[in-house]
Length: 69
Image (tube, rainbow, N blue to C red; front, side, top):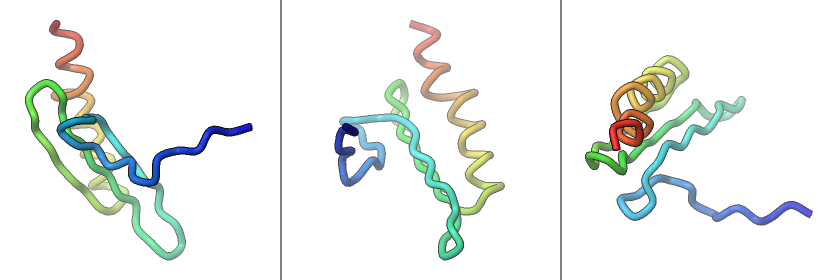
């Protein structure tokens, strides 16, 4: 059995993190993040912009803040 995932996985201040949704034939890829370390947030649409968002989050936010504690 698979567990049921929450309906909305968009990061919030109460639940920070990174969310990436792949493109389909009817929609573009999307991404959001909220940093639990500094509170920064961002949103992107389209493959290139979502990749840049993930790179920014990885280099400067979520994992970067966890590594400094």
